[in-house]
Image 1 (cartoon, rainbow, N blue to C red):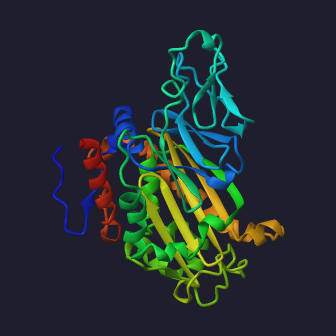
Image 2 (image 1 turned 180 degrees about the vertical axis):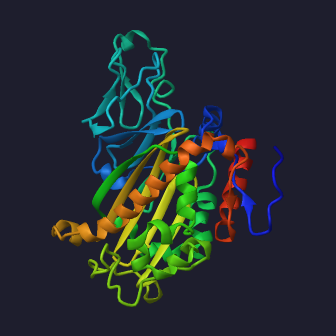
Image 3 (image 1 turned 120 degrees about the vertical axis):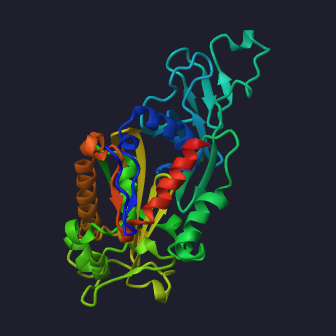
Length: 373
């Protein structure tokens, strides 16, 4: 069956197998997740020396911890002796070191080999050379980012540039002081859909009037189908009768002091490839981090961040959280409805993007270029 010639109003999506083929997903793990800066943890989750998290980045298990002197460290979660997984828990705390449960090779918080059975009888074993293999790490916007590449790309020219491309400058996001905010709520979503469907959904608002009644009540311009991030520097304005970014439009919480006057009563959305969404409103920040697990399975961890005084005082954040929690559920349900059809013969050559979605085509071009590298 021949592919029809599309009118100017429509451009093609990726073919369906990009969302279902394990070989495509394996290539994405190798060429995308294991080469780019990947957001793995909220820095405040690692609040003391020895606190740790283990996360999946591409095909690798990554161990992130804080050293005795307070610096963030990241290592491959693999013992250098026989390759056993060093830490089997998702998070926890050690006092001074990590010990492999297989043969008790022991590493300090900087990754150096400090002990092993009969190690003193092996004086030729260099304790630094046989320490944990380190991973490049950055702490920015209150989050920990890692890059598994042997030669990591410039953080400034990739992650920071994504912010600059969306907002026009970096100072706009720095006014929110995200690194000083506190975690008010975290919800983890188990999504039975490909990670790209989630990104594509977040990038467009053609669906907003259909499935997001609460969001379009707060942000009326979204009902027109153009996403806020379609325009550089643009923030969607709250409706005239809306007091705050809440599920019923009622008053929000304490406003972040650094927010500029022209950022007040506006919502900004930012995509940071390959797996982060940042949502900015005057009184809180919402950060989504995706962990692609397989071609049809993605874990999304969503943080709602507020001024420390809001969290410490026990103020009710439920109306604030509920708005985007509903948006998340609506979006992820839509992605899960799409996922089974990606294997349909009807979608073999893909679908189409209407004009308000055309910018998704740039994401597809970027991905195909990464996979071809």
